[in-house]
Image (tube, rainbow over all chains, first blue to last red; front, side, top):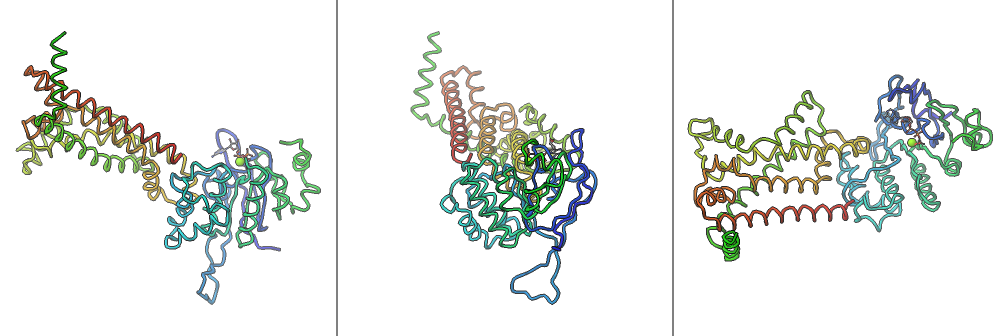
Length: 244
Length: 234
Ligand SMILES: Nc1ncnc2c1ncn2[C@@H]1O[C@H](COP(=O)(O)OP(=O)(O)OP(=O)(O)O)[C@@H](O)[C@H]1O
Ligand SMILES: [Mg+2]
């Protein structure tokens, strides 16, 4: 059994007179968890609560500490620290500056200034945007902005990366490109928690599936299992296309 | 009717011949107003940014006060600075009443609230757009302030130009604290007021034409800058 990455305990969130999250309890263990569910199920809100951007009305989020692997320092006992989180939003915000400076910005404010420019360049190369580094970020296309946002988050070397529909509004080629980048990020040791409406993407990337419906977790299933036989009625309806 | 046209013709020839008296008035006006506008932008944008991202008791009251101070009557600003700088006043020892320095102070008092209130609005809108993204990147509220100032830089320059326009066209405050002394504290607006009352309409009109042109130029500049920045940076 893999060790837990994060535990959510009876999370409730009330907003604008209705219950947005209704007793969400989850333990994520997989390195790549995909969150599926119809519009308005509470997926984006759940990511925000996990990230600490939204305080739940009740319940708590517990991130498991990770071993602090400082390169070049051999600690007799691995020091533990809270995991570093990064997030790519459904609609990423680009700062009014160049693509390169957008990626470097995250590192600058996190005390990684000396290597920021060089790392940012490296990251832009990895997401295939090296040729756009001097462009003002806000004039890029939606797909290009998604890739800048991925590079910016990845550059922080996070332990966990939260992704909210990073492939929304992309063409099939763009989807494949983002997917490849996410696989690479996962391979570099970062745990992925990702929301998507693209079933193909979920099938190819997921280890575990969390299926959300009406503010609750309808099921949490191994991906291989989910796409053959979901455990919940809502999950079955969703796969049949009856639930959108 | 013809005397107006005649005055206008005289005014234009004065303006185009770069009459030394007229030029010295225009130069002093620009010196005083540009200095005041620069100081006000530094002060006002800083205040605006702090109020925009800050969370402190009395914040709403401060915003209301700032917005109200935008409409402060220039003569009142002038009166306050006059009281502060007059011989018996708390800052009387500096002896700067009836100098360009006093005029700069009065205008800073007048324009800073305008810059602060407008930039507060601009920066708060930007903060609303950026807040989640910046928080996610680990940026604290106070660290966000310089980022927001930089990202709204073009709008803030426009605000600064609006402040400059206000300073240039203002007459009450500089009249009170400057005294409209020929060759020392006489600026375009106070000169127009004086020359009109003396009946020297060509000079008054010439100054009026210059003032209008400068204000028009400022607005053109602000407009072009905005257009360019939107095209360039989105
Ligand atoms: N900050 C918030 N506070 C309270 N309620 C919110 C907040 N943000 C969104 N909601 C509400 O929560 C519900 C779920 O929204 P959410 O954005 O999580 O849906 P979603 O599952 O991500 O849907 P989609 O697939 O359309 O992105 C919506 O009804 C929305 O109005
Ligand atoms: Mg969503």
